[in-house]
Length: 332
Image (cartoon, rainbow, N blue to C red; front, side, top):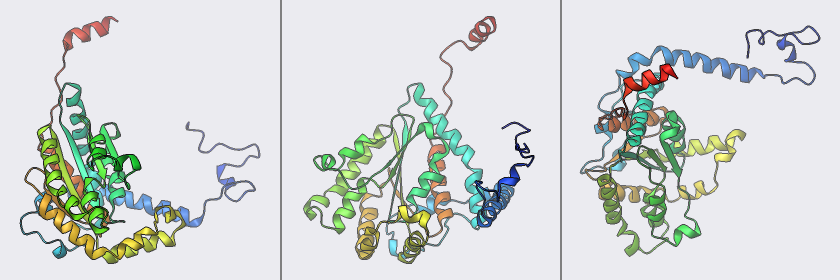
């Protein structure tokens, strides 16, 4: 849009503002205007707190890592381990770190152009409404070129005809990519266990199979980051209620989610078993309290950043004579 477009007049000599209430116009509601104003004010406040908010991040990765003796039932789902700030500071910290995350992901991608086989796999598991989709939208979207995101649903007929890891292997990141799984191979020791979809002697062997699979991934150059977004049953009820109260959220609502609430205790037992049996040195689990969406997003971002920083990613050197190419370009 050019400079003059904003205040351009119509044939009738009125500016654009004349369309607000005019026949055939598209009036902007007062509620929408308030929402836009509030968002602008929030964006301004967030921007003003970016620098100081980063200082409120402490040793978040170690705080969230699942170790020996970890008890899921003891986690406070509204806590913010490894971060001392409030919601505004959390949003500011998330935004402040986006540039570094984007830079590191680009370095990972650039390395692969020179033959590196390294990649990163982010596995996000959690109960319905625990914020997995929000993490995909607000955290990993900073560098879409090098990101391969997969949301796993109930297996198709073709997938059921293969080993449970078959569809997972087909979705793994290529060298240089960040692969992001919204649900994953762990569904086959969670949903399958809770609903008795296969015999116990089948799913009980899968923990060892998963550990072997993830060791193989690590040996091939894939860094595996595993996250459980952990919400309370009450928080889930509130989020499901919001989806029913808002027409713009109906598309997110699944009546089956209410049925699954009847199995909450069984799911918590299944998750505890997953954490006990598959949180390994090479691929540890991290349990992220997720009743506060802003914290869950910040936590996953920081887990990614810590892993990428530890990879010591470098820009690949030129495989041509830079000075010679400068001269050729000048003469072209």
